[in-house]
Every structure is written in structure tokens, then in C-alpha cells.
Length: 449
Ligand SMILES: *Cc1c(COP(=O)(O)O)cnc(C)c1O
Image 1 (tube, rainbow, N blue to C red):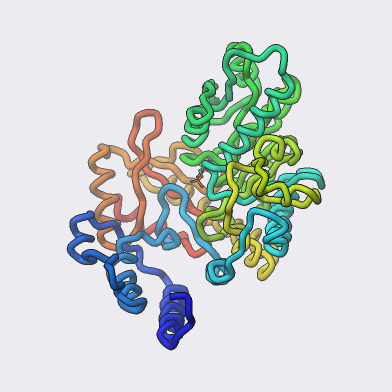
Image 2 (cartoon, rainbow, N blue to C red; image 1 turned 180 degrees about the horizontal axis):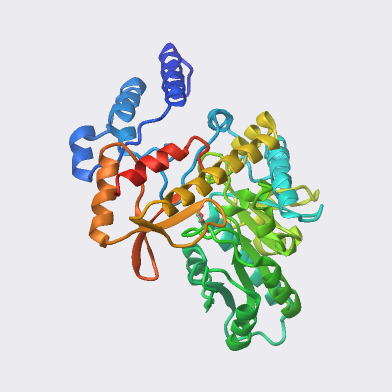
């Protein structure tokens, strides 16, 4: 199985044909899940002693397994946070897969790490971080938030060798992504909640009061630049003031919203972001890269190295020349160079194309909000900061939303799941795909009449 034979050649052609076919489809089929019993009936036992052969396995994937996976890049996939990789990013993912690159160290992956670091620099410039900033691409925002908080706590421990608090504490709001609460559990630290203002925004005064009330041990604040449910940007300038004054680490979670830093029409909402200590954005969301890809950046990367560098005799050779080893900046060692598809697309298209694409999605989001305001049977919950539009259908129960969402999916028409806000079931459009049009959203709203 490690020889390139005629059969491998046929398989390579079949795989390229499959891939290009999927890329050409416009739109891609939406598809939807099947039960384990249905999949067992259709696919049967796929792993056998003698193997099915590549072409049969590919056919099984194409006919049975792929249609049981929703196409996250479908223009009417509007739930959670969608994805919409560029064709260039998709294609380069194939190249990465075929290149056997170890992305953990400079020694092994210098060329890839060099390119990844230029992509990270593009993000650091958007944030306004200084020349010394740097980091690593990790699998997702969950991983990025955890790694940043581990660095922040390590830094706080180093500064408080004498008077260590009984409990370390991280401060965030109820709108903060679930991964931050999870990171607190993993790290065995306390999660201190802060009230938001009426629009779900973290403000300086409330933060100051919460930190005062929490007592000793607060080492980090997580501010969100684009909440997952509403796309709201916290008041980063006020938060940065409080963090600077109290000597608390400021981590900004821009997993979804950070990409909008390159959009002039909303750039002002992020004022103060350049004062963060660490930052994440998921290129696999609004920056048009394939899964899985989160850019994690530190203002002072040496603090992350101190927290994350793994030590062992067999690793010493990597740490002698002061070279940039991506594995030193997060909870990871072996890693694929997952920033490369993002880098390749940036290198191919240039950064202006990203501004254009992201502004287009913002324009569609504003049009959707206006469309909702003009219909008497739906109601906006709040004006969108970015590209998430949350609204209610007047008179609907949770069951009505569920039935409606299910029927849209089964008809291969759209994927618009309900969400819950303040105990109320509502629904939302998360718009990041430049292929999503005003007409798509109007057609979906028509089905709620
Ligand atoms: C999506 C998201 C995350 C988690 O990112 P994953 O890549 O899914 O792990 C964290 N924070 C925010 C604000 C998000 O939208």
C-alpha cells in the first residue's frame, strides 16, 4: 500500500474528478443527517480484512456518507457560524494533505511555518499588534481560548510567587462562547460572570465592579469581538482601560467576528482591540479557510513559550537556535500546517479581495435586517453589529420553529436552526458566505408568513 501503482493512478484521477466536481457545483447540495441505523443499512461494514479497494470506498463516500453531511458552505446554511472556503483554499488543502509537512517546528517545517507566520502577521496587523507579536494556528477557537488562558495564568503565577490566591479566576459574560467556561473547567479555575448592557455588550463599569466583587485571583478577562449568538462586539476600549489599570490579562475572542477587522464599515466597533494581550480568530469561519483553523496571537509570545514549550531530551535539538516553533505557543506538539490553505488563498487573491467579500456579507446582513423590519410577522431582536441577524416569528412556539427548520432542511432549501435567547426560542441568520444573497434570505422569510 506504499507503492504508486496503476491502481493508485486510477484512484488519483477519481479523487481529483470527485474534488473538481464538488468545487464546480453551484450551489452544492445542502444534504442532511441520517440515523446510525440508516447509515448502517446503506453503508454496512466498511472496514474489512481484505479492503474494499479505493474506488469502491470512494463511491461509498460519494453515494452514502457525503450526502449525510450538511454542506456548511451552502449559501442558505445560516445556522451556528457557517463556513465558505475559497476555491484556492480548498485546493491547497489537498496539497497540504499530500505533502507530509510536520508543522510543529522550524527545523522540520521552516517553509510552511514561514508562510503561516506571514498569514498570522496579516491578522496581527488588522488587530494592531506590535512587530514582536506572534502565535500559532490551532484547530479551533476552543483550543485557542484554552491556550491563551493557560498562558495568562502562567504569567500571573510567575508574578505572584509569594501571595498566590486560593483560586484563579477568569471574568467573562453570559454571551461569552461556551468554550471559555469549558476552559475554566479544564484548568480548574473559577468562571466569574459579569452582567452585560441591554445589547449583550460587556462594558467597563460592570467589569470593574465584577472584578472588585470577585476579590483576589482574577488574572484574565475574556472580551468577545462578535458574540456567537448575536454578533455583538464588547466595548473593547473600556475593557482595555480596566485591564490596564488593574493589571489583568485581556484576551479578545474574535473567533467569528475578528475577520470583520478588515471591513471599513464596521472597523470602528473594534476600537481598543490593539490593546489586547492575546487574540483569536477562526479563519475557518469568516476568513474563508477550510476546517480546522484558528489563528492564536500573543502580544508577547515569550510568555506563551514559557507556558507551553514541552521539555524532553528528544526535543532539545529544536530549542537551541531561537527559531520559531509553532508547538511552543499552544497546547500542542505534532501539528499539521493548518494555516497553509488560509495563507495560499491570501497569497493568491490578496487582502483587498477579503475586504470586498466581507463587506458584501455585511451588506446582505443589513438588507436582511431591513427586510425583517418591513414584514409584520417577524421582529428583529436587536440591530446587528456585524453579520448575525436575530429575529422572532410573532406567535410561534418552540415547536413551530423546530418543525419549520426541519422542513426547510428536508426540502434541501435552507439550514436555519432556532436558538434560545433569555429563555425565548427565536431564530437567526449568520451570514458569512459571499454567495448568500438578499433574495435567499427573502425566500426564507417568505416561508414563515
Ligand atoms: C465558534 C466560536 C468559538 C469556538 O470556536 P471553535 O473553532 O468552534 O472551537 C469561540 N468563540 C466564539 C466567539 C465563536 O464564535
